[in-house]
Structures are given as C-alpha cells and as structure tokens.
Length: 552
Image 1 (cartoon, helix red, strand yellow):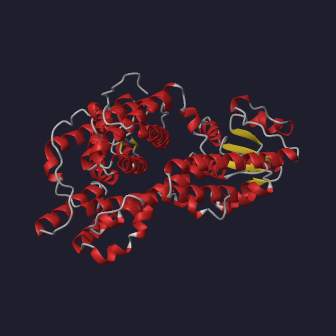
Image 2: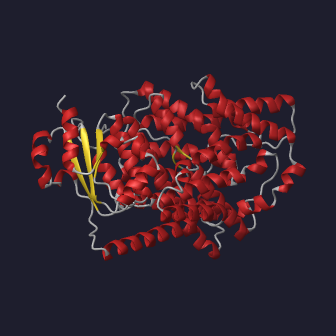
Image 3: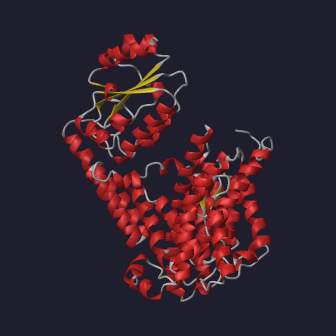
C-alpha cells in the first residue's frame, strides 16, 4: 500500500472502476433515500458525502461507500420514531440529522480507541439474524410502493393492512415493478458491461413517461450543492428525544462499522491487500458526519459497489472518490430528470436487494447448526423484523453470551480446560510430531486447537491461518481437545478451508470429537471441502498419507 494519500499511478483503472461503481450506486442511492422516509435527495446527498470522504480518509483502498440496506432500515426506524415525537418530518429533522451526526462521531471514536478489534467478537448467529431481519424489512416495506400505494412505516402495520393492496393497487405501477425485477435479473444474461439496476431504472422510467401512465413518482429533486443543515440540528430538539438520539447514534456507529469492515474483508480477499480497520472507521465516521451536515442519510462500505470497482480496475482510494464525484455530477446535471422515476421502479430495485441481504446460508443450516445458535438466530431475526432493531442486537448478544457461559460451565464440570488459540509462530510441535515435523516443517503447518471453537476465537484463528506462508502445502488441524463448535466456528473453518483449497493447500483433520464431526458433516464441509480421506484418527496416519503427496 502506498504511503501517499492519493496515488495516481493507476488513474485509468481507478477512473473506470469509480465510474462503474457510481453507475451502480445511483439507482440504489435514490431508492434507499425513498426507503428511509427522507426522500431520494437525502439518499443522493448521503451517497456523495460518504462516497467521497470515506474513500479519502478510510483505510480500504478500493472501498466504495454509500447508503446500504441495513443502515437505511435503521434510518427509516429513526425517522418513524422522531416523527412520533414531533408530529412531522420537517419538525423531526433536527433529531434525525443529529443522530446521524453523532453516529459518525462515535465511529471516529471507535477508530481512535481500536474498537475494530472487538467488532469481530459478534456471534455469527446475531449478525445473520439481524441481516436477515433487515432484508425482510426492506421487502415488506416495499410491497405497497411496488403496487403504487402509500405504505405504513412498520412491518406489523404493513401486514395488518395487506388486504388493501388487492383493492386499491395501481396496475401500471405493478407492471413497472415486475418489469424492473425482470430486467434486474435477466439483463446480466445479455451483458454485464452495463449494470442491470441502471438499465432497469432508465428503461422502466422511459416506458412510464412516454406511455403517460399515471403512477406515483419521486417528484422534484433540488439541483445544485446541498445547503448546510447545522442550524436544523441545533434547534427544535425536544428533551424527550435525547434517549432516542443516543440509542440510534450508537446503532448507526456499530452497524456502520460492522457493515464496512465486512466489505473491507471482501475487498482484501479480492485484491490480496490488508485494510486498516481503525482508519476505515475514522473515514466512515467523517463521511457520515458530512452526510448529516448536508442532510443526507448515513452509509457504510457497499459490497456491490466495492466489488464492481475492483473488477473494473480500481486499485486505490481515487476510485472511491471518483464514484462519489460522479454522483455529484448527476445531482448537478440530471436531478430534474430523476424526478420522473416511478416509486414502484425503486421498489422493484430494493426487493431483490432485500433478498440478497437475507442470509440464506445461515437459514439453510438452521436444523444442522447447534440448537443454541439456531435459537439466537431466529430470535434476533424475529425481533429485528417485527420489533426493535436496537433490542434485537442487545438480546442476541446477551443470549449468545449466556448460552456460551452455560456450555463453558458444563465443560468445566467435566474437567476440560478452555484455552485461547495460540499464535502460530509460538506454537511448538508435540512429541509425536517431531520426526515428521522437523523433516517437512517448510511444507506443512500443524495447528493445535484447544477448548470449544466459538465466536470469540474465530476471527483470530482465521487471521492466523489465512496469512500462512505461500510455501506451505498442507495444514494439519488437530482437534483432539475441541469438544464442541458453534455456528461461528463452523463457518470460520469453512472459510479457512475454502481459502486454502483455492491456494492448493491440503487440509487434514485429526481426531475429531463427536459434536464437531457431526456439525462439519451437517453443513457438508465434510466431504465437499475436506474429503473423507483427509480425516484421520491419529497423527501417524496423517503423516503416512502426506508422505505420498509431499515427496512427489
């Protein structure tokens, strides 16, 4: 990574990557703005500010940031709560924007005090349940706009009001919504050179305009540079809203950090680089503060935008800045045209996004992962979808910790000592490994796991193993002292094995205990990723097998 703030050596690739990422972000920024309840303009303002400044100050060279599904759902919940206190969106703007601003401030604080080191301890079941709940919220809240109708602001109210769709639906809106979804999914079969969301947005809007269909549209979008909203944030803040502001600021900071860092890991895997987590949080915080100051919704690292940026040639933070500048150019030049976009088209773009956010992998394995993890996942999903997003995360983390303490207590009663995972460089071979290890230590790596493999250890383990030397040809994982494994542990092992398999590194398991063996088989890590022939009861059997391949 270059020490320069801006590196112009790959300006052509960065320009192309940023431009493509901006094209992808445009329709989603408009859609997320409408979803938030603040209007398409707020989505565009947020995408511009977070896109430019998170790229400039962040710690991931190829990150494309902007409004995301999870952040928008929380913003929509805040808007509803603030309106409940003040009575209207206009009088609630001070509460809303101050919450966004404080969320950005907290992210900067997180970066300064290295809170990124603790984000990895969130259990998979909690993150999965929350994200799946967010996906369901997006889908449910877009059902009425998809049919051309005004929607209630909560999932429960939408379900209760659902029969109205069949009585009052706008057939033209419904047709445009279905056409949008068809283009979204089918156009990539024709070409992936042009992002399908943009094609769907333009094509369906043109159809509606020239056929003269009477459908709800976005309406007027102000052109020009957005005005500062500092005065709004400093006035009309009723005392009863202070708790709401602090709660949502904390949720924005935590969720935005998790969302961004997950995307940073994806970018690392694609570019074979290493992001700076603390700097990334600082950059995201600055971007979200400026988004609030100019009246935009908060954002985070956007996975889709980041992936297309990298695939189109982006390699430095210039690409992320160009992605934001493109959106600014659209605002300055084409804002008036965006006013004619039908709301059902935006709903047609958001519904597929909702389905993508749902963690189908976690849901598919519900009956196969440990029951405690499944219970936490379902509970968090239900509370997120039909209750409070803030309570969902709190309940999930608390329950996951309680259940783990119960497991640890049970194991302690059986005399099993729970130890931390050692550093690979400090790990010493056991006596029964010495002859083989001394001969082949440049080609093999032996990892001893001790105690339960649970959500508290998985990130550390993944960081150790995925950074092993390129000369290593085989990894032996000794599971003699691993009595149980939770959902986070299962998926961590799956990621580790998959990554090593891509690098032609063999993975062998030694002496798997009953519960870990059952769980690894239940989600097909065995035999899909680790063949039955690579499962051994003793280290000697593993060494005998490896001699046949390593000595070739």
